Image (cartoon, rainbow, N blue to C red; front, side, top):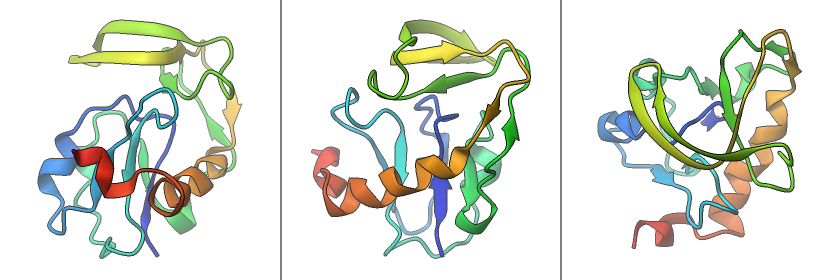
Length: 135
């Protein structure tokens, strides 16, 4: 198993710094890969990244919620295709400076199926740039 970064990720890289196997990569280009991704072949499932994420965006794969109830004010990021009502955002979220190409703040109570974010995590390394995004 691996850990999965979901659309709750606002591209804060604190989680990257604590990964003992350096398997986390910031998605590039952002319009196609809007958050961080974890290499499922390298992840040792240690969970060090989970408490470091200020947005609680990382879950063990088997615990990614299909019925996540968004609290008021939570932000999500995604591609324009999957989040057509999103917009560029630059500012502070929960005490952290963020700059996002396409994001949306939720009013609260929305139910999100975050399991939809599992395939892009695998795709980033199999079909997308994977570790080449580090260059």
